[in-house]
Length: 220
Image (cartoon, rainbow, N blue to C red; front, side):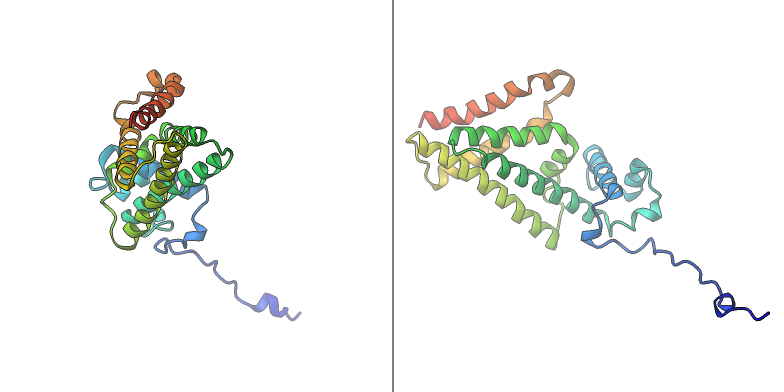
């Protein structure tokens, strides 16, 4: 009996994706890339960006060293993706919360609590944002600088609205300095925060941070 054409065709070997091909940005946000980004943040926070290696990150994520390059091009891209995701999440949640109220005090409290809540839940990522800000180069550095400016401008606008509501208008330099001081207080939070001791005090920590900046505005 003559075999059909289908039977005569040789079996085609399955195509394998090359482990050296990095995924496009819109393909990346699956469970594996989330695990890799969190693992990389933990390694960068422990060892620093300069001393950490891709092998360290692969070991922390329990992903084979060759396979990790399926998801990224190099270590700097990992740092960029960690930073971008953190700023995008901070911006999105802050904007959502402040848009829930028109009261300037409630908006300022919401911004502070959002920043510190994110910090408490993502200590490694916040360490990376604060300590490795100058490690990015080229288009990576430019994109993170843009996100950082957007986030800073949001904070500055909230501070100015709060001050105006209390007849304590801030000039351009006063606004810039107070914004920088507030971020300084919030971003170095990780140097003394101990979850076992301080998590139950998180409401008080946020309130004291608000009082610090509100008091400075009230005393002008």
